[in-house]
Image (cartoon, rainbow, N blue to C red; front, side, top):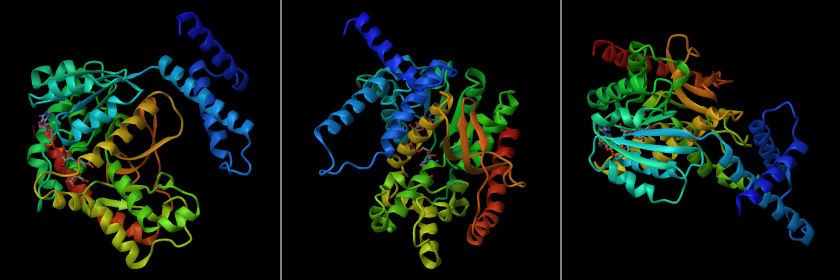
Length: 405
Ligand SMILES: NC(=O)C1=CN([C@@H]2O[C@H](COP(=O)(O)OP(=O)(O)OC[C@H]3O[C@@H](n4cnc5c(N)ncnc54)[C@H](O)[C@@H]3O)[C@@H](O)[C@H]2O)C=CC1
Ligand SMILES: O=C([O-])CC(=O)C(=O)O
C-alpha cells in the first residue's frame, strides 16, 4: 500500500469511528472506545447456528472481523508504546518471559539484563523474531544503567529458585541482596518506572524494594507490585478441572473462570477466595473439597519444585503469569479502563500490615486503587487471620534488611 492510500484508509477508519463515538473524547480514547464497543457488541452476539447463519450474515461477520483487525493494527501503529526491562532475563523465567514479551504490540523496546554472560546472545536470538519491538542485551552491573534509563516497566525475576525441602524464605539470604541492588539501579536510573517483583520470597522482597526506593526519595506506593498472579492462574486452572462439566454446560471456557487470591505468596499466606469465583456455580466448594483445593493452590509451587527434583521451580507458568501481569500494567499505563489484577502491594486493607495482596485497579500511574476484600466466608476470614503473623514477620525481616544495609 502506498503512503497516501494508507493515510486514506486511516481517514476512512477514523471517520467510521467518529460516527460512533462522542466528540468530547480524545482521538486515541475514542479509537479505544470504538474497538471496545465493537468487541462488546460481538461478545453479545448469539453463537452462530448452522440453521440461522445465512450467507449474507456470514459475510457481515467476516467483514466485521476484517475491520477489527485493521483497526487494531492502526491502533497499535499510532499508539504510545513502552520500554520494558527484564532483570534476570537469562534465567528460566527470564528467557521465557522475554519471549512472550517480544510478541507484545504494546512494547517498543525490550531490555534484557542479567549477570550471566549469555544475556546479549539471548537478546540477539529474540531480536530475529519478526515483531516490531527492539531487543537489546546487557550483562553485568556496568551495563545496568543502560538497561534501565527510560524504562516504563521493570520486571525482576533475578535470584535463585528453590530446591526440594526449601521454603521460599530460605532464598532470602541470597535474593534479598540481589533485589536490593537491582532496586538501587531502578531508583537511580528510572525512578518513575513501575516495578513488578517476582524474586522470592515476594513477601519480603517487595518491602526491601520499597525501603530502598524510600532511601532514594523515589518511592511511589502505586508503582511497586509483587507478582502473585501465578497463584490466580493456578486457582483458576484447578477450579476448572474440578467443575469442568458444569462450566461446559454453561458454555464457559477456562478463560471465563476468575478466582481472586489475596494475602501473600508463601504457604498459608496464599489465600484463594473461592467463594468469590466467577461464574457462580450451583455447587460451591465446601468441606473437604474446599480444604483440599485450598491446600493444593497453596502448595502448587512446591508441587513443581518436587516434580523438577532439584532443577528449579516454576518457570513456564510463571513466565505466562508475569506476562499477563506486565500486559495489565501496560494497559493501565496506556489509559485503558477497568484493568484489575491481584498483586502484593502497599496497602491498608489489613490495618496491621503495610503490604497485602488483593485486587487492585491499574491506571496511568500504576495502582490506581487498592480494592477491598469483598464479602468473605468464615473459612476465608480465618485464613486471613492465620496469615497475619507470618506476613508481619516476613515484612519486618525485609524492612530490617534494607534499613541495615
Ligand atoms: N513470584 C512467583 O510467583 C514466583 C517466583 N519465582 C522466583 O523467581 C526467581 C527466579 O527463578 P528462575 O528464573 O527459575 O531462576 P533461574 O536461576 O533460572 O534464573 C535466575 C536468573 O537470575 C540471574 N541473576 C542472579 N543474580 C542476578 C543479579 N544480581 N542481577 C541480575 N540477574 C541476576 C541469574 O543469572 C539467572 O539467569 C526465584 O527467586 C524464584 O523463587 C519463581 C516462580 C514463581
Ligand atoms: O515455589 C517456588 O519456589 C516458586 C514459586 O514461588 C511458585 O512456583 O509459586
